[in-house]
Length: 314
Image (cartoon, rainbow, N blue to C red; front, side):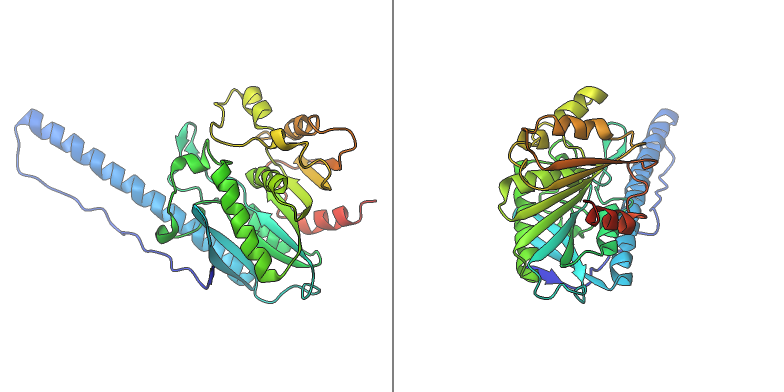
């Protein structure tokens, strides 16, 4: 079921309660003061995090509104996922059998090294901006990741592992696939193109490996070989996640284009090359590296021209 409409943004406390106790013995009083200060600091940090999430949500919903799009919460198995689509279908979308779905990246997985964030809502909704800039024929939609953008009532099963080591877990893939079914039914499409930014590209490959209606995959700065990536950068394995590289053979015959940035120090072209090396001969995958682009820049800003150049490829 798709529940459409605007989201209500919950308010936050605008102050921190202060407590002034009675006079204590010097040591006891000092300990009490330290404990009180620590408690105040924890509350302040919590309020700051809440405020940050609120701003990130508001920024995304402002983009949706300004683009004349609408949003809804998709009840998708284990998770409630944010979906968005144009209020008025793009020219040529009515009656089209094709639907392009943009999948958001991992978002704010960590607030600092080795410290998971309290909420993975992205600081920059790059995939959403790309979806809004979409100029292709057919219907278009956007799909957020678990626990991104949705309000507290829809944060079920939002354990931090689902934006850290289990970000590509089987239940995450199943939830996204269920949401895609709903977006597909809404647009009455038959064929799907999946466009994934960063970790959304990882999901695009994993989804395509399990579905029969994906006719094209486009990834942007995507982590397509987790094993290679964690070994290269000496990260802990993403225990509980599926690795797109393990499904390279399964998607080899699906037309696909993988875009990377020359200056991407987060993922990098070599990660995609490692993924492509696992494909059998005769695969239908292509790699394009963009000079001057990084992991974040300048995909959303240049997406219209990039998309046009992809369509005009021989």
